[in-house]
Image (cartoon, rainbow, N blue to C red; front, side):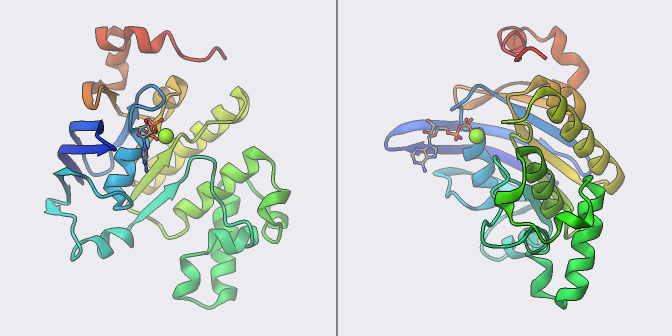
Length: 237
Ligand SMILES: Nc1ncnc2c1ncn2[C@@H]1O[C@H](COP(=O)(O)OP(=O)(O)O)[C@@H](O)[C@H]1O
Ligand SMILES: [Mg+2]
């Protein structure tokens, strides 16, 4: 579905990504882990076209993502941003239906939004609230509803549990796993939370020193030497 090869990106002469190779298959759930500041978000921004890489290639369904192919890709992806990043001047339903409203009447877009909110455990009474009125967990859920509103083929999750307590984090992980499984979407999750990896991932890749230092199936990570130090950093439940 997505293949990244030889991806490089520096900021002010400081290399962040120095040759990242990574692939995710259709319907697969890949987690990218790494310490804070290793370039996980930069990697995601390169794939999304929000940051221009210095070198390397990104293929989508075997074709390079460029000015010509990117619009079709952009119409097929959903994104849950770190910290939810809701538009604070729009209501919850308007956030969820942001993209839908460009191509359907408001009444219909609102109905879809309410259906997606229900899928993430938020009742219709939340539809007309403003983001400032939501708790952290509710905002994540609303962000998740927005990410899946347009039935994306590829969903990106950037640190989906950051800022949540362990119980709410676990609920969000379970929700994400359920949604990924039932929609058959390809998922790329960026996280430093090993509980997220176990809950969400089929496969896991460790980003370290600008490269993928290890990758394998999730059950194999307990026996992977390069991950030994990293697993020890899991915050206690
Ligand atoms: N637009 C930018 N300009 C300069 N430096 C940046 C920019 N974006 C990211 N960086 C730097 O790149 C490194 C990786 O950042 P990031 O991808 O956000 O890390 P994380 O793995 O925590 O998501 C950090 O040192 C960060 O300061
Ligand atoms: Mg980040």
